[in-house]
Structure formats: C-alpha cells, structure tokens
Length: 127
Image (cartoon, one colour):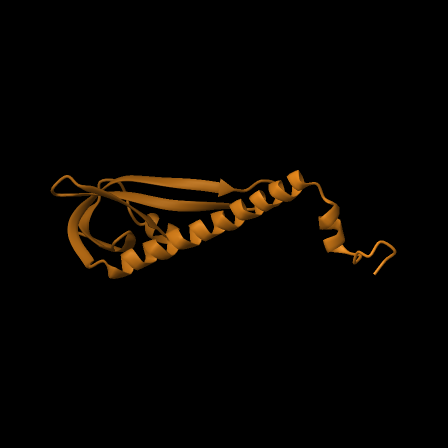
C-alpha cells in the first residue's frame, strides 16, 4: 500500500481514469470480442449446415469464374479466394468457393456433373 491507501499498479490507474474513457474502452472491447464471436458462430453454423446437407451430383455447366484478392500491403503477402458459378439444367445457379488448383482446371463453358455438399465443392467431372 502507498500513503493514500490505494494499491499501486494497473488497478489504481483504472480507478483514476475518467468515466468516459472506461465506458469507451469497454465498448471497444465488447465490439471486438463480439465481432470475433459472430464470425466464429457464423462459421460453425455454416459448417453444421454443410455437414447436414446431402451430397448432390447434378449435371451443370461452368458459367463464370472469379477471384477475390485481399491483403498484400507492405511486407504482407496477398491472398486469393477462388469462386466458380455453375448453372444447372433448370436454370438455377450456385457459386462455390474452391482451391486454386481446382479453379485452374475449370474453364467457362465446361459441361459435366457437379458434386457438392451445401456450399462445399466436392468435384466436377466433364462429360
């Protein structure tokens, strides 16, 4: 204890901090933790939905391919997400994320049988 009866250290610093800064810091903390929790919950929910979905094989045609590049500033390397849109015989379409190695094997206009489970790409056999 010091002369004023307070414990020295971090908690005495918090006691002397104005209320506005305590509230603002708490709000930022709650938003950051809430954001992480939201991303984790959405990912777990999508994983559960995909796992519960049936493995589907349907005739389809590749109608579009796209990439999404993110990061890559300064010393950081860029990352790329790959997506392919398939169209079924009834006109319905589905866009599925996939690995770059699979993405490179597909060309717009390819026809074949698409295998997927929910939003998980499982394969494509050309016909």
